[in-house]
Image 1 (cartoon, rainbow, N blue to C red):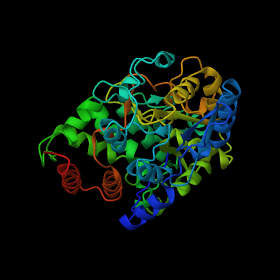
Image 2: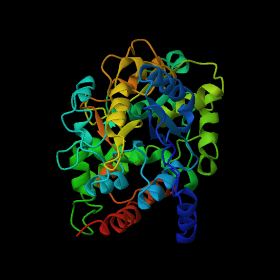
Image 3: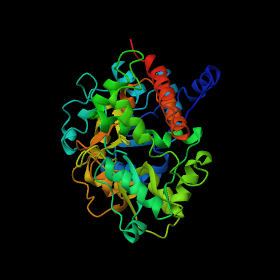
Image 4: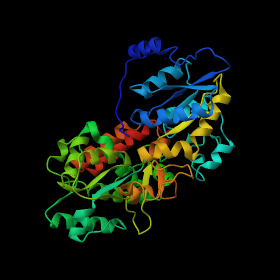
Length: 416
């Protein structure tokens, strides 16, 4: 998952609307067949999804699936929904503000109580409920943590930290061994890479998702202050990154950080499970593993993430029965085993065999869909990009007063 800042003028959106307005129109049924459109935002997973769709069509010969997988899918989807050209089945990101607005606006079918939800891990769908109603079926989740060079750790006699104090000692020991602790990308363009670090600092210090957002977005205006205990602890944890990155980290991109870690220029890479393929493409000569964000005390470690492949059904679909059958099929082991074996993201589908697969990320993925995973804090925000920026600004030049001012400016507009 690569979060990018996207700015599009109204003129361009109008142009997109005129081009896309009819994109999702169905062909007339032939010989009793019906067609549904499945709109995906997972372009990198086109091949396994193609296979899954073909398998579904074999089992349901009267249903044809039009698979839409376009560049800038998020922008295209917003345009299509705005023009009431809504695909039958949509791969949504239910933690995002736009999804929540659409659900409240009655864009999606209410899926509460559907039998196929019983194939998911307890609470997986309920985590994204809107007014106690379920509008999406979350099938996989991403997660954030720390990749580490397990081979070098063993050589140095190092182990993943169990709490924050151990983490600080680990970083200090790595430096004593003559190595840079972190592979970082501290440019504004790739500031999103530390989103998980900053969010988890607040969550572990305050006590979880709700407590973190109580301190950030639900506090009074200008309520984030440098003299508060939680703020002091969070900045202390952010300080661990300052000066502990690879050479020229403040000018490094996402790809540079991946390369620095893969070439053993630094032993720890803060990033999400989505980065594993990019790391493997570098053909590192060491064993890769992950650990979660350490808490204040042992046993309080957390990861942060959210639904990556989640499906919603259009309220206005003319083929709801067929759309339901497709979503039902996607919750089966038959479908999701094929997806998981390629993607490796933790899945909520209970019957999928995950044992021994993708061992590199097990240190973090073991916590997904448990109390040790929080949803991205921006689920309760109206935006997130500026949060990325102020995080990197602080890591490059730690200034608590400026960070407090920036956080207040960011969150004040979301407060009443």
